[in-house]
Amino acid sequence: MAFPPEELLPTTRRALLHRLAVGQTEGRTPSLVGAVVRGGRMVWTDGRSMIDDHRPDDDVQYRIGSLTKNFVAVLVMRLRDEGALELTDPLEKHLPGTSAGGLTIAQLLAHTSGLASETPGPWWERTPGALRPELADVLGEQPMRHPAGSRFHYSNPGYALLGALVERLRGEPWGDVLRREVLEPLGMTRTTLSPQAPHAGGFAVHPWADVMLPEPLEDTGVMAPAGQLWSTAADLCRWAAFLVGGDEKVLGADSVAQMRRPVAEPSGPDWVASYGFGTQLRRQDGRLLFGHTGSMPGFVAALWVSEADDLAAVVLANATSGTPTSVIAADLIGIVAEHEPRLPEPWRPLAEVDPELLALTGPWYWGPSAHILRLRADRALELAPLGAAGRDSRFRALPDGTWTGLDGYYAGETLRVVRAADGTVSHLDLGSFVLTRAPYDPGTPIPGGVDPLGWQPS
Image (cartoon, rainbow, N blue to C red; front, side, top):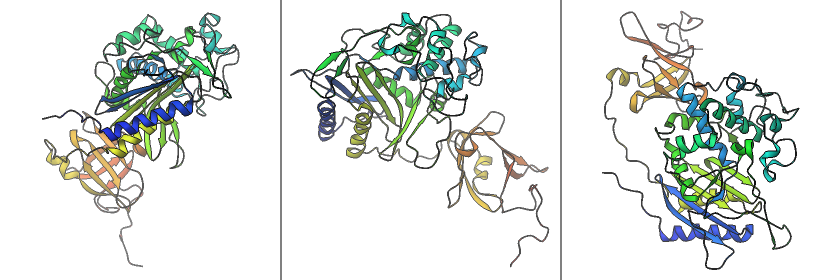
C-alpha cells in the first residue's frame, strides 16, 4: 500500500515562514511567495507582502524570466526523442538563413555556442520586441564572442534561436506548442506568455532609499523564449515534480535526466555551478541542486530540486534586484531536509533475477585494479573500484545483450560479456578494456599478453 507524503511539522512550517519573512524584509521586496515540494506534491506554501494583512498565494502569477529556458529545452528534447533532429545537428540543417547556422543544437542548449550574452542595444528586456522583429536583429553583425564549443558563455539570443527552431519544425508559434505539448498535459494552466490576473506588478526598489519605481512590461517578441513566461508557485511545483521523474505524456525520465547532466564535466571536486541542457546545476551547503533561476525587470525567481532529499523549492518575487531568491529557495530545501530528513526506501530484493547475470556479479580486475560488479533492477549493472576512488559507472541493459554506460568515465561506452568457445564467460569488454576474474588472467586475451612466468616474488 502506498501512503501519501506526510504534512510538514508545525516547527518546520514556522521555520520556512521565518526564512521567507527574512527574505522579504532584508531584500526589501514588495512581495514574494515560496513553496516546497516533497514526494512529488506541494506540501507547503506561503507569502509575504508590504501590504498589511495580505499574502500572495500560490495562484498569483510572477514573471519567471530565464526559467523559461528550461521549458524551451524540453520542447527541443521532445523533437530529439521524436527523431525530428539530433542534438549534434547544426542549426542550419533545420533553421537555415541565420548567421549562427554552424552552431549545434546542443551548443545552443548548453550555452557553449560562443554567442553573445545579449542582443545589440537597446536593452531587450525593457523595450518592445517590435524593435527586433527578425532573428538577424537579435544576433547583430558580430554575434560570436568565443569559438563554438570552447567555453560556457550564457547567451539569451541562443534561446531565441531555439524558440525559432521549434516554430520551424512544428509550423506554429513556440508558445502554442508549449501550451499544447507541455503545459496542458502537466496541468499547468496558470503558466502563460502574458500575465493573467491575479498577477504581481513588477518594481525596482531604490538601492539607498525605501521607495519604488514601476518597471515597464514589454512583449519581447522573438526574444520571448529567453525569458517571457509568467507562472505561479503552484504551477512551478508541478514543474519541479516533472523535472525529477519526467512524464511519458511530455518527456521520459531518461531524457529529463540527460537535461540535468553537466554538458562539460566540471573541473575539480569543489565545483559550485554548472549547466546541462537548459538546466542549471549548483552545489550549496553540501547539496546538489538542479533547476533554474530567472530575472526580468521587476521580477526574480528560482526553482531548485534536490533529488537526494526528495525536495524542491520555488521562490518568486516582484523586485528587479535585492532579493536573493536562489539562496532562499536553497535554504527552504535545507530547512526541511534538516528538520525532517528523508527516510530511505526500504530494502527489497529484486522481483526477478537472471542466473547468468547473477553469476557475473562480484570481483573483476582491470589489470591489477580490483572492481566490483553489482546487479541492479531491470538487468542494470554497476561497476565500481574496490576500496579506492576511481572510475565507477552505472550501465543500462540494451536489447542486443550489451550495456551502455550512464555516467562517469564510461558514459556512453559499451560493456559486453565475451564468451569462450564452450559458452563460459571469458571476460568483460568495456570500451576495449579487458576485465578478468583474476588479475591479468593468462587465459584471457590481455592486450600485450601476459609474461609466461606469471606473478613472481621479488
